[in-house]
Length: 383
Ligand code: G3I
Image (cartoon, rainbow, N blue to C red; front, top):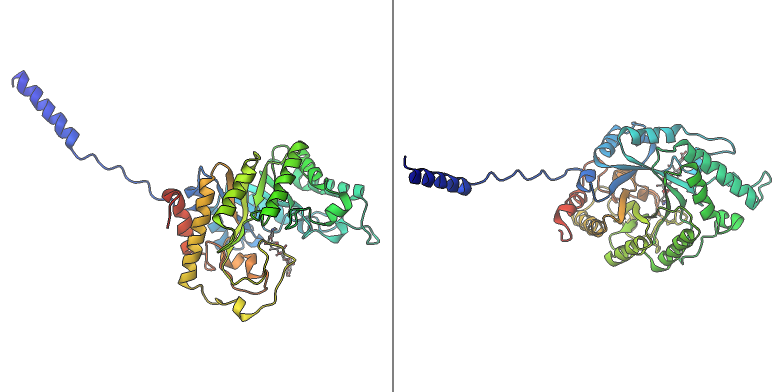
């Protein structure tokens, strides 16, 4: 075969090779879990109750292990649970909670050290029932934080050090922490937590920071702490949302306002209330309550498809904002796992049937789950 013909043949072969349909690379399977879908963007977590992390609720525990990369204790690390009486600590449930998180390689959050709720009266009063002195309360706070944070040093990655210390107008809430110690109770709590575990992230956590007055109060608070070189790592926006609150603009500007201070921003207690409004206020003021009325509890059997769809759209809208802020937003935690676990079944009206989360009472994913899973692949646009 002449050289000319050979090279022609080789060229032809090369051409055919080039023109041959290249095998289309297999599209990577769409992530089927929240933690996989948001890997590299932010952690996705859930607040756990004792039945889940102790394994009693085996279905709940399995769902948590499959879907989430972070955990928060809904109640067991609160003062009334872990330190019910002077000098008496009960670490049984918290030890199990931390062990569960470690077993599944999750980022473990501690909630919460200093709060005006679920803190026993003895903390603020002496044997005669009168308020204790500033120094006594500071010493009690110091001992509590040292004992609790110290026990989980290196295992709990971040603590909600101070929770809900602001009123709706942005001023400091008149809790016994403020009236007995004074405004510096917040910086003291952060310093004690840092002392007990210098490696832990330390957060200020609150609700309704999407409302301007309260947001401005929180921004001023973080600035004050930073000016005092207090080791505050991040701000937790609880995210007890509704179908119509907060707006995308409020969410966007709130995340931007705290990111601009150089702190991490987390959504720490996300749920979306779908039931008729029973109280005027937004957020999660647990002192609020309203009487049960049938029209406030319209869907006791199941959620109509139209509301399922509205919830899916709402969650996609919220996650589009959060995904746009990935890098600034470092964690998104749901306040509960399935609808049956949610505190929103009993607040502000006891005994309602609410549907605020991504998984139904049977543990099965709702349309909102698919909508949230799809956001990273759909980017800023969406359903
Ligand atoms: O432990 C007792 C139990 O012994 C008793 O039998 C039972 C019956 O009343 O009550 C149990 O205590 C309940 C506790 O949860 C533990 O389940 C309290 O009544 C109940 O009020 C408490 O509710 C918790 C609420 O905080 C209290 O403030 C919710 O589960 C919890 O989801 C909620 O979480 C807060 C966050 O910590 C901070 N941000 C707002 C959020 C919602 O309020």
